Length: 159
Image (cartoon, rainbow, N blue to C red; front, side):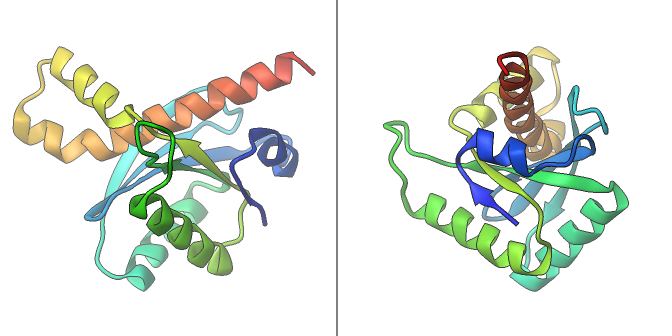
C-alpha cells in the first residue's frame, strides 16, 4: 500500500495492467470514474452519496471490487496558490482511513479547476441544471483521472 503525491512512485507500485479509479471527494458526494484495464481513457461512472465513513467506505470498496480496480487517483483540493487547507487535510485523512481497510496504491492528484472544466463541458453539452447537478461529481472525477492517465502515459514514453 502506498499513499503518495509522487506519480513515479505510484506508477512503480501498480501492477502491469488493471483498471484505475478516480475519486472526487466532496463533503456530500464522492464522484467516481474508472479506466479500462489498459488504462487508456477515463470514463465517469457514478456518484456515491456520503453519509458516514464506514458506509461510504463499504460502498466504495464494493464498487472497486466489482471493477477489479488496481489503483486509486484521489483528487486533492489544493488552494489556488498551491497550499493545502482543511479540505486537503480531510481528503488525506479519508485516504489514510480507507487504505487501512482497502490497501491499494493511491495517488493524490491536484484537482484545481477539475470541477470548473467539468461544468464547462456539461454547459457546452447543453445539459439542464438538474442533470448537471446529478453528474458533475463523477464527470469531475473523470477529469482528475484523465489528468493522471495522461501523466502516466508521458512517464511511460520517457522511460
